[in-house]
Image 1 (cartoon, rainbow, N blue to C red):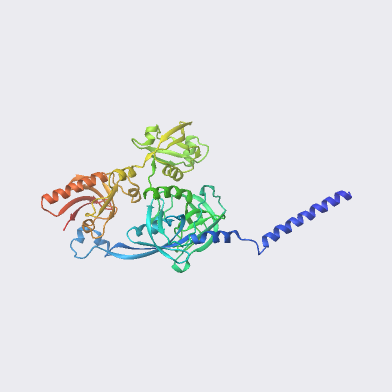
Image 2: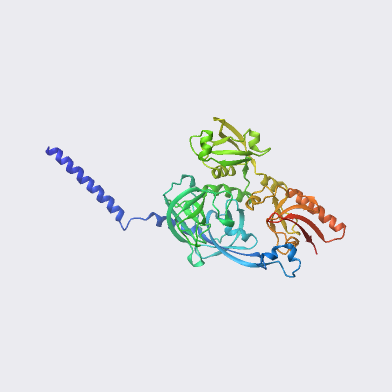
Length: 485
């Protein structure tokens, strides 16, 4: 009994020592705070971005004057340009000491207007550089810009992590430049609140491909483009947006996963644009009712609702009502995840799909092709002659979908140059051009061909106008006249 009592006393003493040790560590005021170490190592990689540009605005607010028919009776300029200044954040992710080029990751919406304006980057030591655009991708809201630094400039590079390994609840550290130039490199701390957030309406900045990290680390206006870091000091996301009813932080911020950005950056640096893979199906979410109807064990996968003609999917034998369960052995959890998996694959790559057809599992190999809009862009110019001031894209392009174009014919106007013949005619972004001088145009190539033909005929006939038949943003037909002085 005596020996047993001694053993019990020893165990109690060890437990008390263990508790005391744990308590001491938790309360040790001299212990190293890992967040402090992260900030020390990465904060100076964060830069402030200032964009100065000009935007075109209407001279009138009354929608009455938006109608080209009524505007012809009033003699005043329909548009004017005004300067804008916007601020954002970015971070250096790569540096070449030989060329002294520092490459900076940020958001497309932060710097897109800087292509026609000026982008300046302020480093941690307050030295200012003029930046150039390497590439922009509005479909993911990712952009790369670069600066050439002075010989003795200290350059800190932020290491990139692996966003696929994120777990909900782990620490998240955001660094950026909220609200004003006086709050540069503000550090905020929170956790990963959720992953794979998609189908978010973020206004004009809503990217087509969404797989957001959600965090409660404070993200405010001006933080866009800054890094979201893990406790190791690795970049796991690019801060991009916030959900707010008052314009300030309410604990719901969103960041683009760094793994998605890495794939985009590869193309942007190589060619200035992203070439995406294409499979050619309309994917539909699996609901509990669809799960029950098709005898699935869980609400996962995507249902094939449509197979495009002559697409990789059709060539591989995919059929309507097939259910795609896996891509290359990885489970498909939702339509946004499926869309990103395809879009970030390589053009020409063979992928293996596990599908369910008539309640039987089978595998299908699909050879991915370039997205049709990228093929058009590579072979046919999507821009009209600059003298007209019109830029167009195909009716099935990503931007046409974002503009919610209803027409199945024509080409969609994606840009109108200020003070051009197109601008003076009343043509606007989102209009669909159906005909030029009575001849149908259903692709950018046809648009350019017919426009050149019309200009040639105009010169032969010694006139100064070209007639366009268009649909406005309300899907109403109009005849607009391009007039050349």
